[in-house]
Image 1: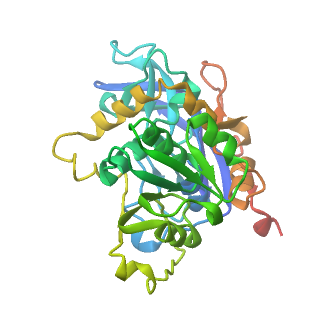
Image 2: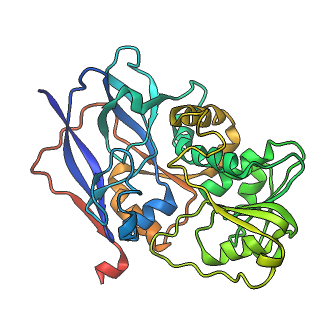
Image 3: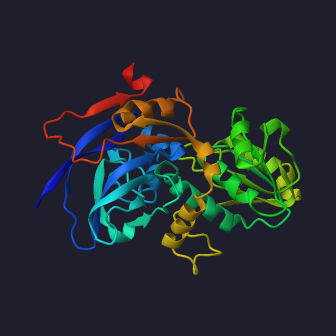
Length: 347
C-alpha cells in the first residue's frame, strides 16, 4: 500500500515534539484530508500539555483520533480544517472540519468529517468544535427571553456562548473577565463587559467558563434567588473549594455541569452529535466570530508555541496553526523530531 510521509504534533508533560508519521491511501468509505488550519483549544490543550489530566479521567477525556495515553506521549487536539484530496469522490476538493489532532494530513472515515459551508473561511471554521460546545451549553442552560445573563470567563468557549446569547431577544449579556483587553472582544460580539468586581448581580443565569475557583465562586455570587450556574469548565487535577455558607442555601441556588461529550439531555433523543456540529458550522457564517482569532503560527512552531501558551508567556484566544502547501511532505523515518519544553524543564 502506498503511504505519504506526514508530520504530527505529540506532547508529554511539559514537552512538545513533531514526529514523522506514515499515512496510507484511504480505503472504502474513507478520505484523506490535507490540513489547511488547526486551532488550539487553549484551556484543554495546555492542561494536557502540562500533564494535568486526572488518572480517573484518562479514558473519558480521550479525544477522537487521539493516539497514545495520558499523561503522554499523546497526539491530542480536535480543531482541524482541511481539504479532501483522496477517497470518496463526492467529497474530493471539499473543505471539511474534523475532530483530529494537529497533523499535516490524515485518513479518517467519511462519517468523521463535516463539510464547511462555502461562505465560512477555513480559519474561522476551526472554531466549530468550540461553538459546538457553546451550542450544547445553551441547550443545557435553556435561557429565556429577557433573562439577565453573565458569562464568566472570556476565553474561546465563553466568547462563543456570549455571541449565541446575544441573538436571543431581550437577553442582557455581560461577559466577565479579569483581563480588561477582553472588553474590545465583547464589543465585537455585541455584548457588555465587566471586571468580576463590577459585574452586575441579580442574574437569572450565569454560565461559567474561566476554569478557576475564583470564577466559579463569583458566578454563584452573581445569581438572583433561584438562579442557576452552568459550569462549562474542566479543572483537571486542580481541586476547587466553594463558599456555600452564604446565599447558596437560602437563595436556593443551583450549580450544574455541562460537557460536550454528550448531547445535552434536552436534545439528546432528537439531535445527533453530527447534527449539533453541522449546526455549529452553519452558525459560523457570522463574521463576528473573527474577533476570537488572535494570531497564527506555522506548524513547525507548535512545540515552542504550546510551551509559551501553557506558561502564560503568550496570550491568545484562538491561536491557529498554518500548514505547508498542499503537496506531499517528504519527511523520512530518520528525521529527528523537534522539541520544546517549559521553563521548568529547561531549568
